[in-house]
Image (cartoon, rainbow, N blue to C red; front, side, top):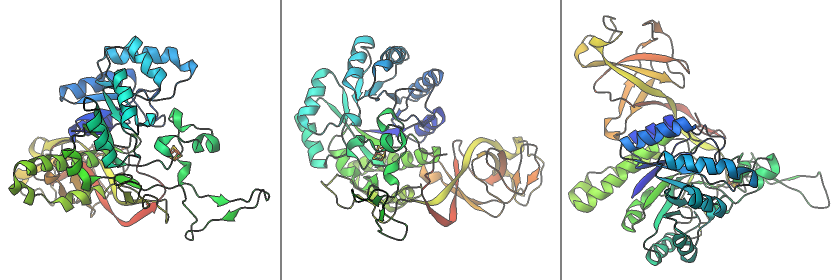
Length: 437
Ligand code: SF4
């Protein structure tokens, strides 16, 4: 079973792979339904294919807009290009785009996007007979319905969403953003107005708005919780699902890395536990589960997994829960004796043997005295340190790190590359802004 990770940029794609994704989905600059993500240029797509394939991972490219006539010529060129660079599949939802792939890029595998709303085995069978290799099922399906589709169309690969934001609208078929903001969700431009506050207006009294108050801040009648099926992984694995997808091409590098590594660890542990019960007793599931809470998220729901869930709506707020802040990523690690900081005396360099210097690309401020954590692809390597001194790249001691700056820290122990720094927030924030850095 593949773990599919979102990548809104080439950098996030690399972190997704290094942190354990089997496949990454990342779009080109056009046609990929996440217009506000950075997305990848053609040159970056070439690099992405090389990076994924050199790590024995796959790259799937969403081409899941509902195309207009004006899109067809450019789209045709894009599909030919994707075939030429040998991406592993394209993800489509529009039958017109589907036939363009067959006519112009016949060697491309086709995955059917969740936007196509496949909700029955007849629909799945139809698309399978057309040549679709995999279907990303609608989020509105229960586990029993998914199993039935698998049994009735056994040759078809099935992928389901396992984690991330949900649309209040049926499989993203939504006009709210287009109507209120002139930015169509079906063109990848959703501004998420379903999270806004709404009032009641009686039809014959235009201009008179009656507040709908669920609490003192207002109402959230269209505000879905976030999906998390972590506890259902065992069931999903046994059922023979081919791919589990993490939502979030707009989310931060930290979100992608931490979420991917936890599902990676959980699936590996599930597989090991199936082979050896002794292993099962050594897995700290609650620690893994807790890690998922350390990335900003809304309240959790299991969505439609057990059928219609009246608890999938967040009625009491539309805010994100954010207990940790993403501080930056390690870009270099030096032995202290080899590093530019060699010879600098600090309060911690008395036993220089196990000291290393880490260079961090800073995203958010930290300062001496802060307790910060470094996470790594294998969660068992995670480390916590107290910041003593911070150096800039000219080896000057500085009072704090600032965003978009590179700084160096002297630390103890083994620090693999690709580490990510985070800090527990003293007063966890509950706000409307997600962690999109
Ligand atoms: S406005 Fe909300 S429900 Fe509609 S497409 Fe955007 S996220 Fe989904």
